[in-house]
Length: 181
Ligand code: XMP
Image 1: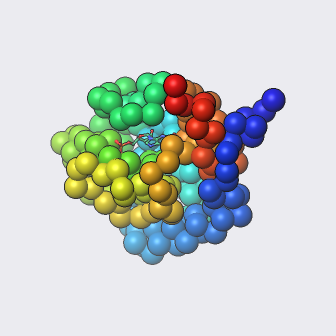
Image 2 (image 1 turned 60 degrees about the vertical axis):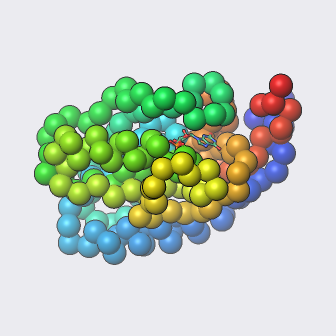
């Protein structure tokens, strides 16, 4: 048995992901042309996306990490906890591009934007790998996004269920019996 056996269907295959990231990387490169900025990758989910994204952006950029958790072991959005933030000098006066794996209810990125501005960031924009607009509960749109997904629990390419499946090279829907009781 491998992680592939738990996937009901593939939503975005590796080559589609590459094409989507090429497009977003070009958009980000244009938006920040001539301006240094910092990519802030929200751990753990966005580490795969962020590492592919930055290698396609030729601009001058720095990389920082932030850790936030809202899900625990389940699939329902819970209270957001910020576990780790970049140092003051990585934030103050900087233009930040906050990168996350998925925009769902919107609470995580909305809260992180406020937090980073409060810590002195000059500008905070957002870039997400996936967008699930049907689940939004706060006003929040990403400035850059790769793909939209329907209201399904998705895993792979950094996204997990109970800590697993981040290593899938594609995005897939988990077999329903694995997360419903
Ligand atoms: P909110 O609701 O704050 O959530 O926009 C963002 C965070 O929720 C997690 N999330 C998911 N993780 N499959 C996952 O593996 C999903 O379908 C999913 N929907 C939300 C994710 O950690 C994201 O950063």
